[in-house]
Length: 136
Image (cartoon, rainbow, N blue to C red):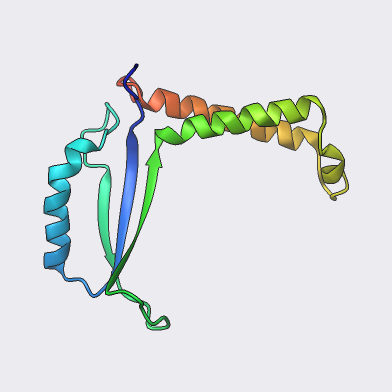
């Protein structure tokens, strides 16, 4: 079994609520212990995880003391894009569901083909990003 080569390119952890800078520092310290568990891009020597404290909204009554959201850009999404592209290619070869789109004003089949090309470029880019010579 081969070892996965997927890596985290960047991640933002947004923490909101009743949290102090001491709490954020505690999270950062505990995160340093687990940072080795995060597989970074081989060309990136910085920590891909950024922790941001955001103020609570005055318009929403919070249900919890602290809430959070993580946005993560990881190359492990590429296989999902590949499956979607394969499914699109199968449907496109049969011109399946095209009639529904052709009823829309401004639609062109070339737009769909162009979008598929952009997705393939993204898959290739994520594949290259997993290699040490990506920036070189």
